Image (cartoon, rainbow, N blue to C red; front, side, top):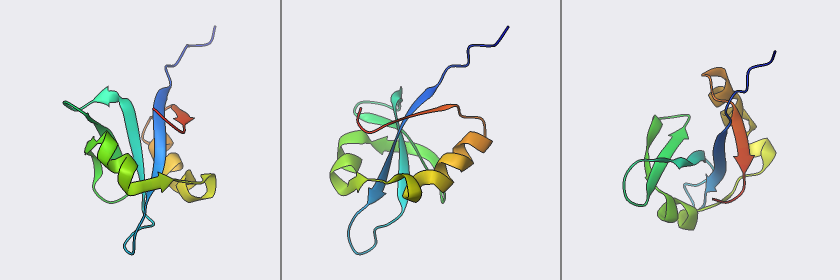
Length: 86
């Protein structure tokens, strides 16, 4: 019998602007306080993020832009369900 492993909803976004390009992962279902959710980046790793602010300062990341971060998260134990909006 297979185990039913819960998937974690995740949204990958890319920072825009002259210092942009880095990808951030947002976990919209993991609450970190009013208006905030858990986030993850290569540098800094886990932290809280203001969901609306991050959405306004980023653009959707393409598969080829977020695949390394997706792999990193999978390697530390996440079973991901990639979405494009909350």
